[in-house]
Amino acid sequence: MTDKIDHVWEIMEKGHVCMLVTRDGGELRARPMGAMPRRDEHVVWFVTDIRAHKDEELRADPSACITFESGSTYLSVSGHAEVMRDEAKMKEIWSVAVDAWFPDGPEDPNAVLLKFTPHEAEYWEGPGRIVAGLKMAMASIRDTPPDLGENKKVSM
Image (cartoon, rainbow, N blue to C red):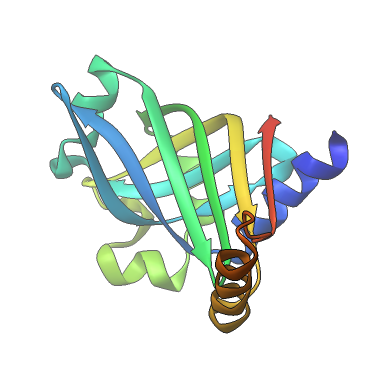
């Protein structure tokens, strides 16, 4: 099981952008976010704008999901998220990419941390598009389900 957990972290570490899904009232809402996975902390950090209302959504329901895609690898991670202020952590994870959104630096009053703690993950890894297409065509001819790779659920 440890190998599968490590694999989930490897997928997250390769992806720099993910989709963050929260609840906005009764509806699901997704938006792209710059992910900063920290395996040793068992957390994925984000810097976000307090004016974007994620804090309100997460106070109402801290359940969240992040999804990553890279080529023919897909990952969905469910967990809990919270918006917080931590000046030391903000300075630690600050980057040039974050600075593009908050030119006043880590002290920008609108910049806050979003801490995502993963609980469960599921990943799908398959062949590239051309190979997948060929496998699907062969499966159709043979009247058998195609083998399109590996799908695993992982408790984090």
